[in-house]
Length: 445
Length: 176
Ligand code: FES
Ligand SMILES: [Fe+2]
Image (cartoon, rainbow over all chains, first blue to last red):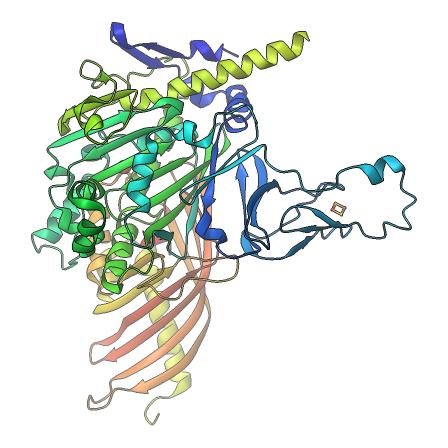
């Protein structure tokens, strides 16, 4: 295996940033990503609104490891490894539900919704040792669990900064999502999961990729045009990439990034239906930010896309060339019927695996993964647009919204900046190096 | 119910469903569109949990929801435009329809011979992906409302229950 630190060349001062295709193709690298990235940083789990009531739970994964997120009887949230302490069966079989107790189906050990061991079947007659009886039989909690305004995260390593520090001023962009409704936001009932036969970082990149829009999605753009011109009888309004004039982006520490485009047609956003309420509650400036087209990545597994409708997507890498996506439509709580209907139709039109845009993206990821079969071609040329215009720090726009960013970029929409991907790869290198150093220390101790 | 003979209706709607399936499998898209009324509802619900589908397309997510044929026309236009890489290499599809039952029928008052017929059936699509050299399988249930006009049967409503909704990277009308 190649040295992970040498798989990313980060020399922007010399006009160079590139990535070795091994990061997408090498199963040994994937193994390290699971250990050193997914098991050693904050990973997005879900929304607090998915476990709104006492004893609500949902199950998910941190990297490859099964996890159960529960609200206990007193309302406290926790996240635990979804494996029985006895001989390992999943304690919870279902994706979501409500249960005060979780009884393992294999030998009947029972746990409370606080993760505590409640009963061990036939404990009295078990001829157990003192050692066993003194042992802790509770579900194993994740090392760190945190919530930022309804977004739930966990880390399997305790060696991480606080969640607030980890998110940094990405919080500004999460706030723009949460504050869209006077009562906050919720995931609309119904979600969809699909897989694509490509590395997870293809999605990580594409979610922030302005350059692909006009070439990957011409059929979507044409359909929007046809509807606007009355050539299609479908009256659904949606975004028009061709109308975009300028675009900006920020990168942050810990791999996060945010992309925004002032929206020339804010009235085609479902949120526009409540524009008066919005302006009076959050002010004109933040209302405008909410109506901007925005795409954000919270490294390594969460993206929120707000171009058509409002999508939250979670990436779950399954192998070096297989990735699972779970997608949700977000909406203000108690949104009016007309706006909700508009939001759903826009979402389905663009995003689903059965939509008119997402399948073109995922097809391109699969074509990339197939193209990487050309193993003698080593270095990517796809991280260079904007490399001469990207600036350090927050810039005037960042300062105007009071955020601290690592880099910023603002200019013509046609720059279609690719330096926004650098953030993820910088964090990738940082975590991989730290993991390899841990391994080396462990091997010599 | 006078004038609607259950046995004759069953064979008539079965033949209609088989024709619709064949139009998709033979990629006769405009023939397929012609089988729908202009104001048809076409609906593929999403799932809320292991056991429950979404039931209110106005408040809950669907995989596809259209309140008019125009939505399907957009999709056909997209495939024919050759501008969508997702359909650049089309799957070879095979629709199988079975267990057809007529669950209700109503004459449309005031229009001689016009009727609405509720049909349910089971469906399976096997598809071969020439690019990936792979096979995919989808299956579920159709809940269809057909209307009989002088020119024949048309689909006024088609709800497609997709039972295996852990999806591959793309799925479109021709695979449902
Ligand atoms: S594995 Fe759970 S009780 Fe034995
Ligand atoms: Fe895209």
